[in-house]
Amino acid sequence: MDFRSFLHSERLFTENPYDQEGILFKEKLVHRPDSVIFDNFYRSKNEKIYCHICGGHRHRNGITGLLGDGSRILFGSSCAKDFFGPEVEKLCAGNLRHRTKRAYDRFLITSISNSIEPVERWMTSYRGLIIKVDIGWTDILIKYEKPVEEVLKNLTRGNGRLSESKVVSIGGGAGKTHKYEQHEILTFISSAEAITYLKRAAQRATLVDAFIAAIRSMKTQPNDQIFANLAGMYRKTLDAAEDVDRCIRFTVDFFQPDKLEIISEWMERRRSVRLGDMPEVTKQNLGPKMRKIMGFGLENPQISLSEALKSTDILTKISRRQISTQDWEKTGLLDEMG
Image (tube, rainbow, N blue to C red):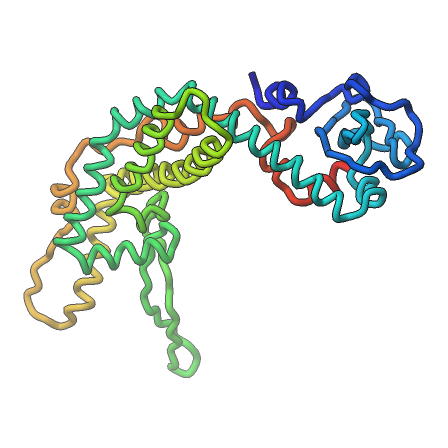
């Protein structure tokens, strides 16, 4: 079942607004009802639906209102705001969004619960790689803190681009020379956003473990609050998974032999600048030493951790052509539907 079908089953959405029980005849309301509940949303592909408030066929997308006597009316949100007043419209719209959000949380977590195995398999397969990345960078930064932090800072400033500056002199007229700073991009390392988390990759992965454990321990009949808590946890887990993915991609790219050689030479030149005119400076050649600490066997997984998580949720079942949670949660959605 996709999300649209789920909303149908929850009576929060319909594509057949005229077929609902208790729909009034096509007659414009004369008096404001004593009470109204925004019962569901409707969408019609083929025709504009009659509005019981304005009396015209104006809306392909609108709202079903449930009145106090059990009858139902159809209208657009702009008409509702004018007819019921902005405060009533805001309260009713918020209630409908809240009910739909609860339905979204139930559908999301149920979908994940039914297909969490790929994430568990991913964690089992690549946990060693995550630990290798975490421990490797921790040891490298302990042993070669200043030069490595310098290169990481350069990569952060350049959003993954390792750059070098030098002053170039150009001859001018009358024997004068002009100096200007020239910047050269030496190489590019992907996913530079990972630099913040390089020493915390394993810590971020523990959030994924905690989410899996929470899903596995979910009660047989969880209430709305549990679904809401797990949905919030899922969003944080997805952020953590993306951090883990970036750490792996950055590390694999950084330790590509050709790039590591460029980085090593860059660090060597920076060291020469720092040491100035000191005689007989022995080269450090940090590239091979860093490689020895990090070890070999680095690889980008065939599917990332965040992709494994996303494959379990409704993102594969809902498109922007359907009804997504982002649409439902927009404050101005009802105005757009009017």
